[in-house]
Length: 110
Image (cartoon, rainbow, N blue to C red):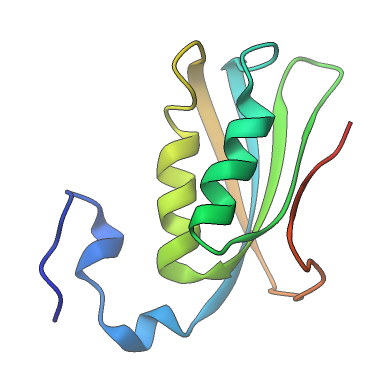
């Protein structure tokens, strides 16, 4: 088993877990608009090989859909719980859905 490099619960999983594809639908609340949350989510997701999309909602939240290996999606979720430097994340509502494979990349929707 690889040595953990952070305190992430996803780092201690076996390689078999890396093959499990999942989909997570997030609604992020706080000071998350106007702080480059969408662009940074795209960058972090792409680095982890996670596909999906991110958009601002009219009520001030950010919506994110993530698809990929369980470990990688978990890493992006952990990042979303903090966000970029100027963000203040108050809550992340996460719903796990059936993996669809509908995304070819990670996109920012405007």
